[in-house]
Length: 190
Image (spheres, rainbow, N blue to C red):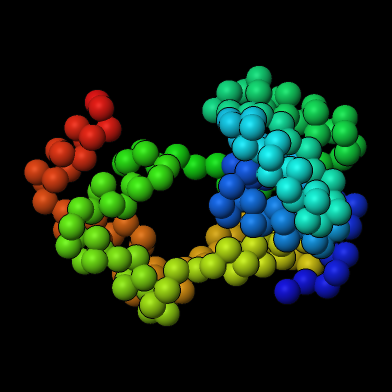
């Protein structure tokens, strides 16, 4: 989407940058010339991702373990990033927690059997598909680049029209029976 070199000499930190969307956005940032700092609680994952991304793009990637819930680990992350690359130009807060049901297989546990078809996210989106990683990486790269320098304090919804059609990603959860919520809570071990 952006011109080659659009992120030259910029250092970007991506939380939860070792897998999934964080990894995809990081790869695109590297392709555009950025230095990358990826972080996660899982050191082995980010070290492997850093090596893979450097091999694929020729860019520079620093992997620093960090739990973003811990202030001292965040301070260490910033210190290490500045020591390695100098100035930090942007932080992409990609870390998230799934508090309804843990990271892999959550939807199949939350919505067993026929419920998974009824609540298929793609069916709630007017485009009838979820966004792909490159579409989201394009927006992230634009927002972190100098091309968006006049954008300030905005929330940009990139959801294929889901919000306009349904009022939000989780609005359909009101149709889950109360007894099912009790079962979900038991699965969490609380």
